[in-house]
Length: 490
Image (tube, rainbow, N blue to C red; front, side, top):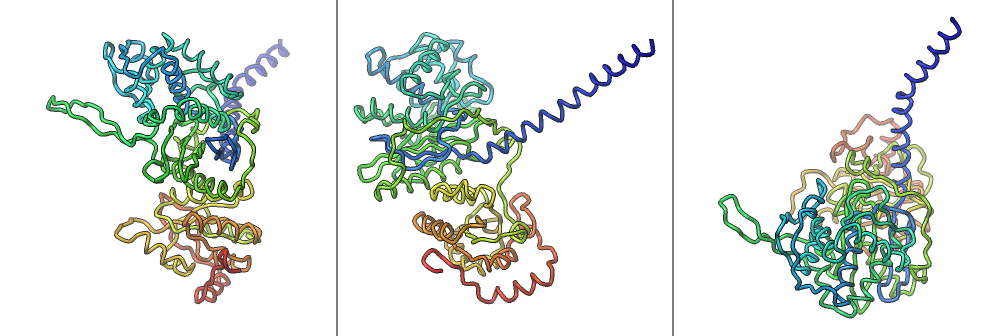
């Protein structure tokens, strides 16, 4: 009897410990997955005419496509129009299933059952404003119902060689099994261009309109036309930009497939997992500019997109790092004091930490150095006095001319680089019109003395802490004459 009681007690203790064990293991697994996703930075630049790859990083990594899914929805709609099955002028009646099918939090036009809209107008709002109800309505117009349309989406993906892509809905709202890769999305973009846009240039309007008008009812009951901007910020940041589609869900971060045209050359760029709408557009701009440079210099991988390999790793979930916390890669004095043995590069100044992150990581991708500096780059705010000692204050004055910023300037720092890579990074920065100083290893202590002593809190420069007497003497000796080494110098 006593033995039986001990066994029962042991089983009870094991059962009681199981929830605690799950509470420990599950968050840890989420943290590990977030750490792995943080190190991934899918990016791809390619020639839309011939599919030639100019720049690729993690291009085969599975990712949740978010609203880039709507590019496949657009493909099937344009295919139906090209085959004569539909016309952009055809009207369709909005069903109750369309209205009920829009998930909470999704962008939507706001149609009601019984409303009538043309195929062309729905496709416009699908591409420009990313409205989920337009995706569902178009799916019904093409295939009769959403499940049948999703089946067609997957069939088309297989025909196009999108080997890692699977669709579960036509609008891109999160589903664990809805995944793609930068490689696959590039294949889809090229197919849209070669099959439709190159033959029907007027169809570019669905991807390139900067704003659309939508009737809205005011509080006094009157109806007016509201002008709504395209969610693709790159159209307003880069004169050569002319399409295509944005995407965002917490699990994927901010995605973008963008195109740009210059001197008869049309390039495409795919970026996944960025931290904001500005960040994805800024990184895409840097990569496209680098793509045009490589095309002109006949550099790059010189292989077609289809030759890139998709990876078997599962798509990460970025919810923790995108929607629950905003973790920026930061740099402070202690990080350089702990063992910066190579060259350091200071990029900037920038008006905000978010802009510093976009520019720094975009430059690392453009220079093919992201893997090399994945753990040795960060951003921080810095005092104007320290900026002046770095020889970058004049650029900050030009940046803030006529503008008022509540906080001080931000910079990006990359450290522990070989001299060759440091000077190469600055050469790329000069092309992008980004300020850059490359500093030799013997200047690391001086650079550390100018950085904040601790990580930023809410974008403010931390108050300086008392420093060891040796650092104070080093800073006093160095501050009188700091001569940063640029790509053209040392």
